[in-house]
Image 1 (cartoon, rainbow, N blue to C red):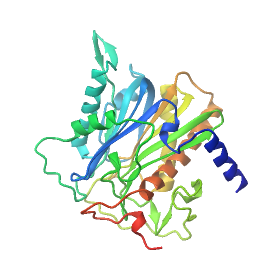
Image 2: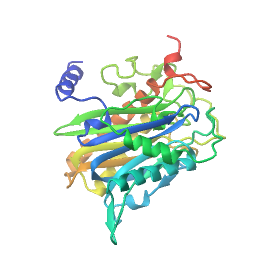
Image 3: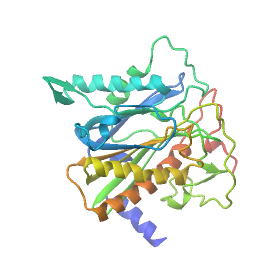
Image 4: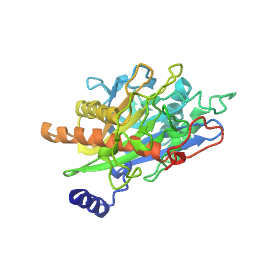
Length: 332
């Protein structure tokens, strides 16, 4: 208890917000359409950042993630996009790329500047929202989210979390941060899982909770079988792990890979054939750390992602035509 309180005092003294934007230079923007019950979230910065990715779900939907492999030519990106809308939501990255191009941002090639905007989508087409659009709305949502990018942003039913669900409750957008020696680690996640983040009011991620950030109810007391799930729909939990530690692209990929352990600790079941679970790993600093530091960062990535997942569900708010209750609707 003493160590936990000491950590919180250090956190407050350092001005930590318990958000991914505790990584200096990062900004997050959300855009939502309440009738659509969907939206998107953009992570960007004033300068390009190094990025890797790791996919463990069986049903991913992505754009420009192949270029994030360590052996590819492009080593840095200008923004990341998490979006609802299934394949339609990939268009949100085009809106972000257009906004970046107007600012002259991008990868210089053959006299042109091409913004690099990897993105991933989640399935929220069957959540009760009005999906009968005449024109794909996600390009405009991407532009709006980019324009809204700030160090402060909403959690729960915001951005890519707007239409998220889990097996038992509404999902949502979550974030959390941690301190690892001289460095910071932050997580951002859109929780749209086939599995459940809770057993009753209790979160699977409870062992990692800081200062009652998702209710302070403690760990699950009994372990039951997985909740019944709808296997006729696709899902997906999308996450970003960021650090100000200097990492190369291979180390960013390892950071993203290790973070999946945190997803598995917070959602039961996870990484199913019907989820497209994906984690981006990014660094805002150039260079590389030694293996001992990387190991500590990877551990923090996993625990911070677990906390962010619980916060996304904890902060979900009710909307008309919801098909599932929010955590806040549960009886005491």
